[in-house]
Amino acid sequence: MRKNDRDFMVGDWVKLLEFDGEKITGNYINARITYVTNYEQKDDYVVFSIQTYGFGYHSEDTLQKIVNRQAKSFNEYIDNYMYFEGKVLTHENILAFPSSLEQTHIHAVRHMLISEGYNPDEFKVSEIPIYGVYYFEKANKPSGTDYFSVFINDQGNIVPQYSTKKYDKDGFNTFPCRSIKEAIEKNEC
Image 1 (cartoon, rainbow, N blue to C red):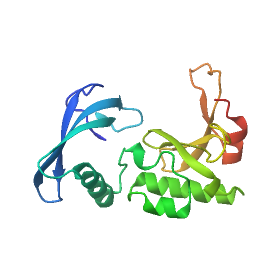
Image 2 (cartoon, one colour):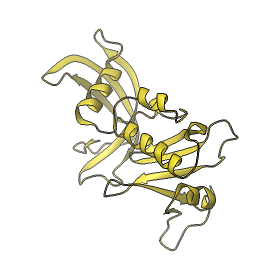
Image 3 (cartoon, rainbow, N blue to C red):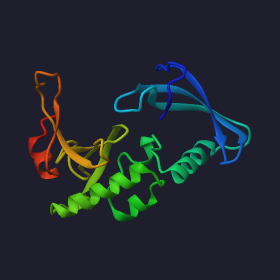
């Protein structure tokens, strides 16, 4: 997430500088923006996804260092779905995730599954399309089996949701519900 002071668009190039908490180190990565949204962000802020295209100076793990340092120091979203997508919700896998809001949210979903009588070790993170939205499904079953999603509401609560094939009169097809079980049962797509 960052201030949209440059009217960012998909295809724009950015240079991400490494900051060690006190100063810019000189290490950097070049990246192309692959996705931009301001959905549910503060005014004048956007979230974007990037594809990296080269490291500057001597540090091949600069992106990893930037991500880990920011996540640990600010406990924010790290916006790198590759750490999470496809991972089974075992306790060990979740502890191995970078310290971040994604890790916190996925861990909470694991506990929600347990409280509803599911075995979380049978589920995996299917997709994280945007900050605060997570899709899950059975890990060792055909894609879409027991598929459900959750979102983080304005109060910071994790809320199960389901999607329908038809849109309502306001153009929405995703709706909150009370449980993961209800989300699985009502999900159409």
